[in-house]
Image (cartoon, rainbow, N blue to C red; front, top):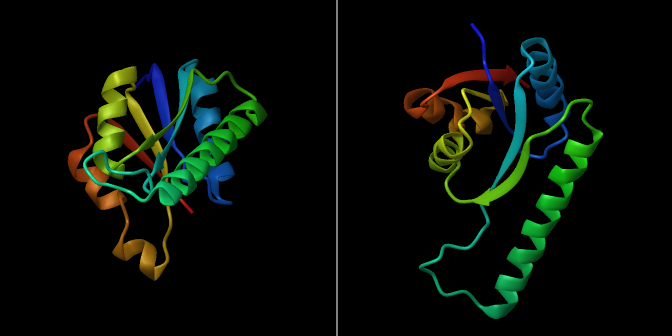
Length: 138
């Protein structure tokens, strides 16, 4: 089995380095492209009216996420093809972005606490993914 473009979904938590490390190792072994994505679930809905102060706070947080993701990409010992922070529903957004960049493997972490199991994206991703999925135990 050979992958040509690995997309790594990063939640920018402290455990992101575990997911990144495993994805980099895999990409190196396969000589594959590697891209990073983070989903900003606080990004405003286009059909909702927001208070101007709230819009500024949301945009500030979004810019902070972009900076943090770029920093992680710069610290990675492998060329990163794309870094992207996108707002929206996690699962649907990942599927859309996989198609856009023509990725053939999605790598993401999976936390195992009580609340993480309750609201985990892993089950949804398994059911809707259009490519192979590698879940890293965190």
